[in-house]
Picture 1 (cartoon, rainbow, N blue to C red):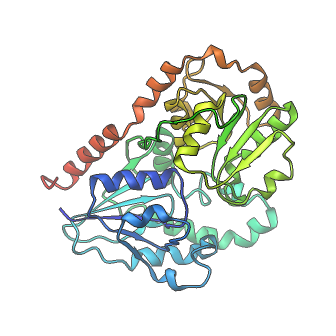
Picture 2: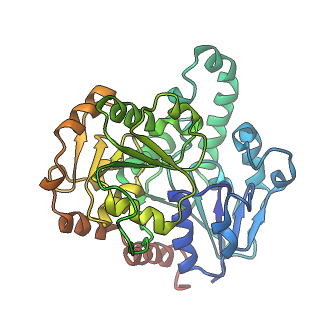
Length: 363
């Protein structure tokens, strides 16, 4: 069976990219189609045969893809998949818009319906003037997004949260298959970091401020609590509000990240996410999670057993949760057991089941 994988853009590293690497293990010969490919910032993709769209040759498209949203639908519609039996799109934007015909089936692994058009619209377009100016464009993009959402033969949602969004915005049914957490190496030396800190692991950018890392920084600063923020991107807006107990780390290796997880008191997860792989990573090291009570966290964190929730997405609510947190009230083995729900072998098994039913007897 000939398989192709499609992804919105290959220019960063995060949870979705780990999903792609797991798919590569199932379909090692599958090429990766994408709008743009930045080799410098996406070295993880070296194992793929990457095929790019015309946007690859447009100045600044690799580094400022957000300004090329109107062109993205055309970038994916121009790809040809006649030679493939199956196309798997992994997407939170326009990769689901690939066109398949004849025997070729299209399976969409949806990370979330296009966030800035739907569930995150008011976050991205919070400025009233900007919202009014861009309204005609957003209207057209929503129309197009709804249309291309009808193209896949079947949907997989990465969480119940995303499943609800797919039904709400695209009126499509989906099956839930939780992403697998890639095993980080076992720390050889856990004494390289102090052991009295909270941890945040997240992409950092003004365009991903919905992750609300600012809440964790502000709350830890107010309490004088030690916090390490791990993540690539622009952290300047966070450093402006950070006190002396906040440390920022970029471009950590998997071994360094493993040590950070192993030594932390708890992971702070302040955003409303589609799923939240970093929560599972923390649990796999036996560490509890302090999360905002919404989104994918509701499917990962078990209150009182593997972590705790703060109810409102405010600094005061998180401060209250941090004040009442007691690390010794959590059992590391229970945390690790919870993480076993999200291992690679389960993800691979469930993906193969869906593929087998979609592409009859070819896997």
